Length: 184
Image (cartoon, rainbow, N blue to C red):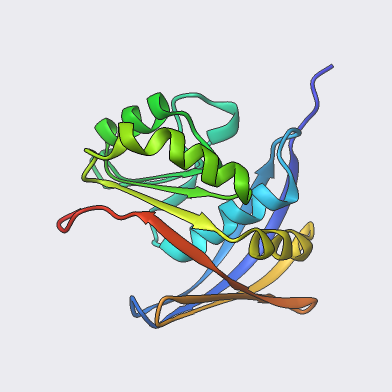
């Protein structure tokens, strides 16, 4: 018998002063049985960082041809493809060919560093790829904020990102490993 996804609800209030984006999003996240709270909260963080009216959670972990999040334009073309974790090079190359912009949020401390050291030479030519390494302390702290029903506030200012609930506040530390070239 297959295990079912666990449903989480998040009321996310975003104040992104860097992009001048201020909105509330009522989100439903389906946490796959093999997904941890840490990974789910990284997906939620990625949503907050790139929030847009057309940004949506995709099937990612359970569907090989979809990312964790994506933003499509009105014609169905993929403007933004977001992966969470340590995807293989083929997945990233395929995403880069399908989307105008690809962002990978890797995490896991030393495992993420080893993954990037092995995969980065093969991805150096991708002009539309951004790779962000999230600090292990930040992702573990995000996992502690996970609740079935969440009221979250996200504040972005001067490229610093804070997520808070009534149970705590997390400043998400990250390091860009690769940035897309201008125009992407």
